[in-house]
Amino acid sequence: MTTAALVRAVAQPTATGGVTADFSAETWWLSVIKAVFIVVFLIVSVIMVLWVERRGLARMQVRRGPNVNGPLGLLQAVADAGKLILKEDFWLKGAERFIYILAPVIAAFCAFMVYAVIPFGPEVSILGHRTPLQLADFPVAVLYILAVTAFGVYGIILGGWSSHSTYPLLGAVRSAAQVISYELAMSLSMLTVFLASGTMSTSGIVSAQERLWWGVAMVPSLLIYVVSMIGEVNRLPFDLPEAEGELVAGHMVEYSSMKFAWYFLAEYINMFNVSAVCVTLFLGGWRSFVLASFWDGANSGWWPLLWFVLKVWAVMFFMIWTRGTLVRIRYDHFMKLGWKVLIPVSLAWFVLVALVQAYRSFTDGSTQGLLLVLAAIFLVAMLILFLAPAAPEEEADGVPEETEDAEWGEGLAGDAGDAGDAGDAGDEVIAPGEGADLLAGGFPVPPLPGQKLPPSPRARRAEPVPEPAADASDEASSLSLRLADDPSAVPAAVPSVVADIAASLTIHSTGAGTADSTTTRPEADTPASGAQEDNDD
Image (cartoon, rainbow, N blue to C red; front, side):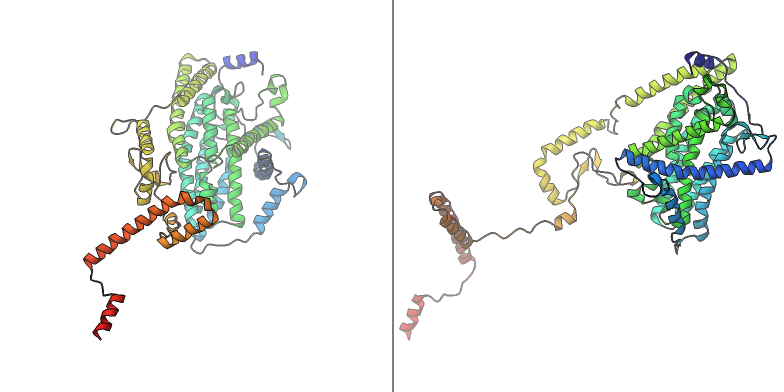
């Protein structure tokens, strides 16, 4: 789009209204065709995205990836599906049998239901009938999407609970906490789109972006939604419910065969769901952005279906890219990001957009230009806020935490000579300002910088046993061997030998005097006593 066209788009008023799709000529068999198309589209897309993800991650990690099954490994996902179908389907003895089976069905069913209100394109002709490329639409279609995605979490929670196992239950609890934390921020980012569009219908929101995408006019909403959607679908760096190093596979640990396949399919379909919602709300839906400026037919016929699919795959590749680039964050950092960053920022931006829309209602003019200016100012303010150095937190006694850390580190450096004695004695190590708590916050924390933990009992058992001190005879024999090997060492060894002999004589004389003064020894068979006995005889 040229600069003049962008200026004209900003100057014109925003389109508002309700449902813009016309389903008056819809027949039951057209609805069946659309439903079958959605199911086939999602399944084929999952098969393709598995190949793209594996090959893409392999390229990022400088390796080959799947390259055996089919040309370029295209049939690897088909082989994996066949393996899951033919795999043994075992049952847990203590599991809740009915809920154990129902949970993956709930997760998969809710995943397929989201695309029912996603517009793929404008009105087209199918077998002589004019119908929009959308299965259904109603004035609160986006609320329907939020309700269905929230209900799909019950499949995860019930699956983890019904297994009666530790790891699945922990993964299910994490999923519930994750959805609660990030559903709020996602909903607030969507509310700004509702205010700007004047409708919650998906077709109406796409129509409101005819001249300018909401992702351009409201960049903060787009950024908040992108972060929240990655947390919603449990992808890196937010895949904490399925962290391999902690929970193996989360709620899917005790599932196999087709039940595991349903969960696996639902996870990737949910990725397509959040991508389609992102395209519909922020990226213009099926509308082209650049081609429409010089091609009048870019947004008519079947071409919009291609633009929509390309946009969805672009968002999908972004999520694959984040998986190959970022690492998993800590659980407490993840929760702080949701509650202390995303939700307050979403509320502040929502208030600004509401004020802009109130201004438009009084002035009856366009607000897209004002939204662009406010979005730029808001982003700059957020960058300054997050990049500015944080002030030291004040403790209860009024001493800054950083000061206590520095003093504590200096104390450790000054007492380095006593560190070995403290470690041998098993003294408790004190952290800055309080006792060291290795389970602070309900989860293990790593040692603080400079912190010395108590020695492990295993390390104590592995310590070598000290050898007994050598006696005088051993020292003499070792000295004779040294002198025999090196006669030139005799002058240097004489003073030490004399000192050792004097010390040993002193010790023996002291011990003998002490023994005579404290104990009564029996008479020894000396030559004098023997001679006396002979004289008596």
